[in-house]
Amino acid sequence: MNLRLTEARAWQALTEHFPEMRDQHLRNLFAADPERVRCHTLEVGPLYADFSKQPITATTLDLFARLADEMELSSARKQLFNGANINVTENRAALHTALRAADTDASLAAETQSAIRHELARMTDLHRRLTIGQVTGFSGQAISHVIHIGIGGSDLGPRLLAEALGTQQTNLDIRFVANLDPADLERTLADCAPARTLFIISSKSFTTLETRSNFDAARRWLQAAGCHDADLQRHFIAATASSDTAIAAGIDANNIYRFWDWVGGRYSVWSAAGLGAFLAVGPASFEQFLAGARRMDQHFRDSDWRHNLPALLAFISVWQVNFFNYGSHAIVPYDQRLSRLPDYLCQLVMESNGKSLRQDGQPIDWQTAPVTWGGVGSNAQHSFFQALHQGTRVVPVDFMAPLAGDASDTRQRNLLLSCLAQSRALMCGQHHPGEPQRDCPGNRPSNTLLYPQLSAEVLGMLLALYEHKTFVQAQLWQINPFDQWGVELGKSMTRELAQQVETPASNTSLDASTRSLLERYRAATGAE
Image (cartoon, rainbow, N blue to C red; front, side, top):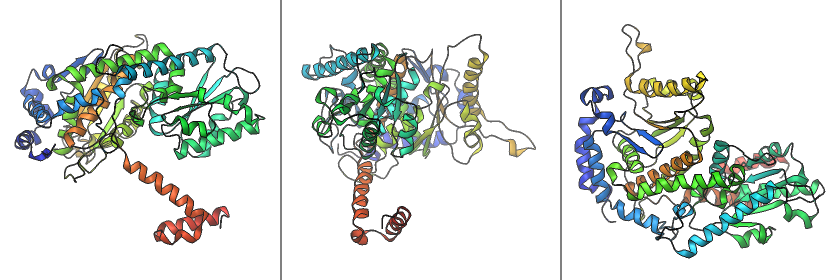
């Protein structure tokens, strides 16, 4: 669309509204409005969201709903679900919602639905064969260890899912490797029997440097253990959108599990890219995981903006970033099973929305993705919370925690109470007359997400919630959240440097710093 964000009438109204909110302390907002909690909470299935500890009023959210209409958010939402080529720079759809859609969803082509269900059925069959010991390695012994090799979206989502929901199969040990550092793979394989180890190579393009390098190292490890070349294919499975490339690399065509070019890496946990997690949690839990995401998809697709949880969280974030100039956002789950969630959301938010050009290629003059980070509670309270309470930078926080647990275990109760206490302390602060060093100013905003207990459905809802929040932010900021050309730049420069290491005479095109660093590398390794 031609309308710039800052030219929208609702944006200008928000700019006029901001001064009356800028200096309001959150304590005063609660004192002035007895109905505040009722008006600024929302329940979607098992998820309960409290965003009352934000510097907002009903007017703020009404203006953002008007802004969404001006920025044609409804049209973008429809294109997302209908499979339009909404990823404009790569001319492709971003149809990850199809991976968890109902079979009766009329908006999806029958061919797409059939292909998705076909791959899920194949994944289920692989799970069955592994569970009963039908998949064997080069010695004829049943597979006992499965190593999922990927990076970025092919690692963060599957690893989060597997660790959050736990390995449910007694005869399979599912592990994950991502880092190019040889120590990652070596430590993971230290107690594995090569003859009983299966590798899943998860890569959309099947050309990613880190994943291909670990793939090659895994082959060498098997060969060193006596696996003949003819038997190597028994130990490798590929999850990829590039079947031909995987076959050329030595993967048996029957061992390739497919996903599609309309599945972005950071949105791929719902597909065969999450095969390692699928094997870890089992088909039933994975289906519940998809059902949870589907429930959030339906809520996002069908709800008006004022009662739409992903949109409301996105509005609040844009308010924080573009009006209050809060450049950072912390994710703090008080649930050890979600300890990987901050890393997962770091990629989702910053790889999607870390852009400085509009979709039409024109530069923008407003801030986009906040630095997204965090850690698991209550550990985080003894790490970075000091800066949250008394630091010079205000960092909004998303808290999340389960309500249910072992009633006889006071640790679970104290964990929840710690979560609630931290959000309250950030809001209220405390004044100590005569002891200014102890003063905490408060007025630090936060959201709190509660759920009965972490289940596959709840996890699916949480991940889809943040996907759609990120999408809404992108539409308001007028950027494409589905490409990642900055990531591609780093990859291409790595290939360039690899060539120049092999042919030092070509190093003259490098800057002096990089050339000097490469020279030190060659001297240290004897490569000169």
